Length: 176
Image 1: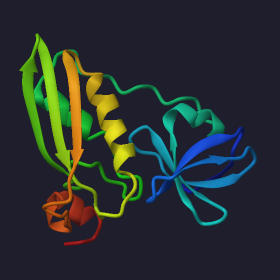
Image 2: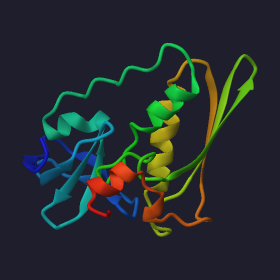
Image 3: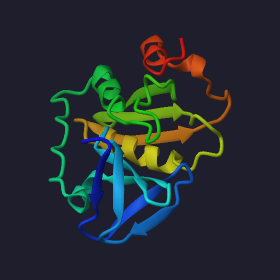
């Protein structure tokens, strides 16, 4: 499905990468699909803009909405990490955990449920995709059983560096 040229079937909201600015792409606009990971689509427009289209707008690309990933039936720390691994950087085909963007995941019990606090960074301080990734994380983690609250904080100290990536990711991206 990647590197496929598609004309948008209808007007479609899209988030410009890396600024995070929201735009409306017009029906008929040709786009090249460059990535389809984590339930969203990264596309390039004819003007060279990199844009992210949410899964809820898959029909604009001519696709049926992707089936929702099955959530864990019981809450566990592993289920939290599994959900975090379904959130992908829109520019790099790697999930945020293996990319080393998640600095901490603190789970506490509250009122018969759980509160999850995530501290994460972005690959660059000027990246405007922080709010988009935060929303992805909040949506996916609140879908887990017994999760009552999710707090995601984006920090830039310490700054992210490629050394934080998993070894497999560095090999995949040709950095080792």
